[in-house]
Image (cartoon, rainbow, N blue to C red; front, top):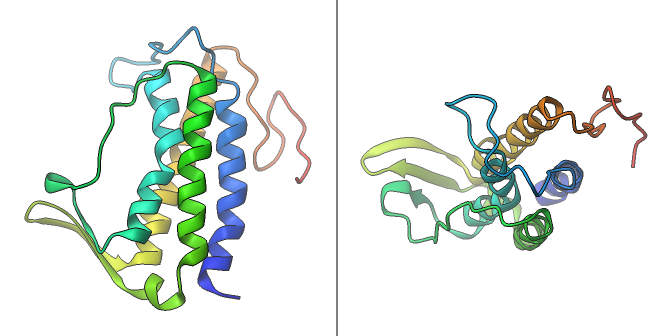
Amino acid sequence: MTTAELLLEDFDVEISNTRRTLERVPDDKPDWVPHDKSMKLGKLAMHCATMPLFGYYILEDEGMDMANSKRPHAPLVFESRELCLERLDESAAKCRAAVAAASDEDLAKLWPFSFGEHMISNVSRSKTYRLMFFNHLIHHTAQLGVYLRLNEIPVPALYGPSADEQWAPK
């Protein structure tokens, strides 16, 4: 099994988990926050929906300097749950295609990630993908689950039962 095939097994599960969580985001609370230092609910939802683009950039680009990025960085404006889900589907499709096309050699190459002169990491593309995109997506999807709970919205069962839903493997 290739590295890309292994990554795709997890990718499909996590994109499904993110989608199931985003499907519950209410249209009428985009500015809700649990704390003054927290991200707004709508912005967090859009962050989760568009994060697969970062995975795509990791796979397609030779590196990234966040201080001088050539990639567009659109504002994370939540207009509706439906549009949020469309962004997830679009960004996930781009990322999935890039993973499927990646060779073991491509994924083993170093991927320099910096902010100007400050080097954030310079490890393999596959490790950068897992740490900076994949784990990041899982973290924020879980954070979104907390926002749902605090708004009395049923939390989906993702890795086992939630207090609101039984779990069955898909």
